[in-house]
Amino acid sequence: MTARIIDGKAIAATIRGEIKTEVDKMQNEYGTVPGLATVLVGARPDSATYVRMKKKACAEVGIKSFANELPADVQQADVIDLIRGLNENPEVDGILVQLPLPGHIDEEAVLSEVELSKDVDGFHPINIGRLSMKRRDPLFSPCTPKGCIELLDRSGIEIEGKRAVVLGRSNIVGLPVAMLLLHRNATLTICHSRTKDLPGVVREADILIAAVGRTEMVKGDWIKPGATIIDVGINSKDDPTRKRGYRLVGDVDYGEAAEVAGAITPVPGGVGPMTIAMLLRNTTDSKRRRIGME
Ligand code: NDP
Image: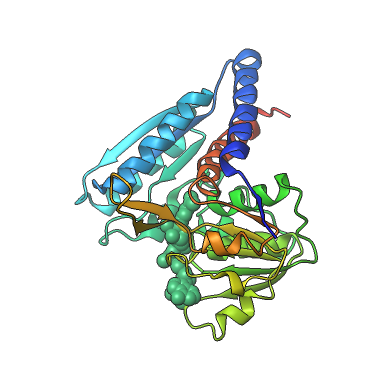
């Protein structure tokens, strides 16, 4: 079997096009556009790159962005003051605190300050709490997990009643994606570093979401024939044939898995582009609610 490729790049481009149309309509009919405030603490190059990519994606669909950069040694109280100001700013519909924060800052204390209606990253403890409860809907779901579900939906892969296995239980990916699958009536198993017989558990999956951050850990013979694989992992692998000496690969051995699976996301070009598309989606939804646009 050769798996169908789930093209996240193309799906994300379609979603960005849909959002641009909505933003143009907001501008024309309501005289306003969504606004996203980013909060970057310190100078981690990867975080700075992510924030830059998010601002660029906002500009492309007509969302306004408000950049806030604070030094790595900033006091927690000052970060909280900044967030309180953004909560009050009517031009700001979404507040994104780029994680990780420096060690001296209590991440949960900061995220809790983001007003619920502007929590477009979906990490406010109340949004996460609602996500984890039956028949409660969070105002926003975290972007990467939401992007995984959107990939399944837009590829016509049914979730209800399927055996879903999530590899990883992080607050950012594993846990929320598991909760989203449960909301959609999958039968769920969550695996982590203490799981026994990982290949045996993975082999039960009709839908596998891999988010462990381990280079090509999931092998072809771990996969149930015909399964759908969503590979969230982004890992660098030495590759002397590349100018930069490495290439990006996922948590799944793509070459092997594609021979067994029914559908699979590539890395790069799978989940990655969806994360930013979902951030634009959440920010636009926030503005829609605020202005009462259907
Ligand atoms: P974390 O390191 O926070 O979590 C990794 C999880 O995997 C943990 O739950 C850990 O278990 C589990 N794990 C680690 N090693 C093993 C193992 N050998 N066997 C079984 N389980 C294991 O990572 P994140 O969730 O933040 O990210 C996961 C991957 O997704 C990374 O490659 C990251 O770069 C990528 N990512 C991609 C995004 C995108 O937009 N495409 C966005 C965010 C992340 P335990 O809890 O027991 O420690």
